[in-house]
Image (cartoon, rainbow, N blue to C red; front, side, top):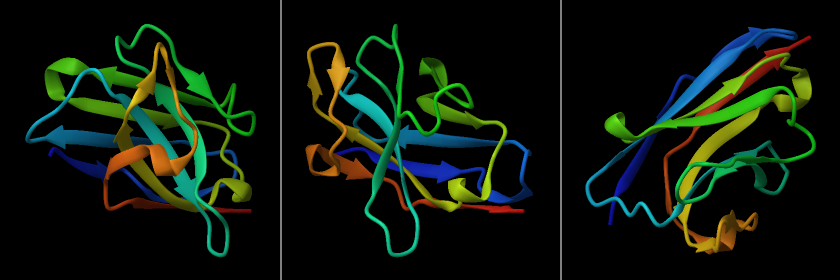
Length: 126
C-alpha cells in the first residue's frame, strides 16, 4: 500500500494564499481518486477537492470553489492544492487521501478512502 505525505501548511492572514502538496510513495494506483479533505476542531472531516483517475477533470466543494485549485504532477507523484482568498473558516487540518473511484468521479465520504496522509495544519487569522 502506498504512503501519502502532505506539506505546505502554515499560518496566514485572511486574504492570503497557501499551496499544499501531497506526495505519494510506494505502490500507487493510478485508477484511484486523489482527494483533499479538511477537519476543523470539533467538526467532521470535510471533502474539499478531488482529481479522478485520468486527471482530466476536477471537482470542488461549494465552500472552496473559485478559490482553491487542485492539480497533479504525475512525474513527481504529487498533487497540489492552491488555496487563495483564505478566510478564518478555512482553518483546519488538511489531509490528502487515495480511494476508489466511481467511474470518472470520486466519492466525497471519507469511508471510501483507504490511504491517508498525516495531515498539514492551515491556520487563517482575521
